[in-house]
Length: 117
Picture 1: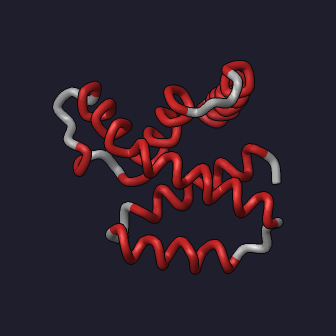
Picture 2: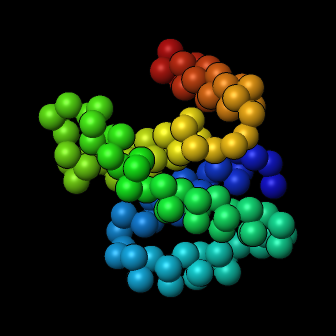
């Protein structure tokens, strides 16, 4: 899997998490992971990435709350919240190189700009 594909899977899991409580989500995550045909390496990376995000979730949500003037977390759309969480985790806590993240963000921004035109 490419890095982009892995990030999409992490986004899907973050999005799904909003619909389930902590324990039911763990079951849903396992079911979702079993339905895909991934290499062990890809599955391990996705699960590790999710675990790291979940560990930092209180800090991430605090950052979102601090900077979203007039918006509580429960008022932010589930898709947007998942995107914010993933982006903040990658920008603030992920140990990957900055150049890789910037390159990926530039590609997504360019793709979005083309779609908006």
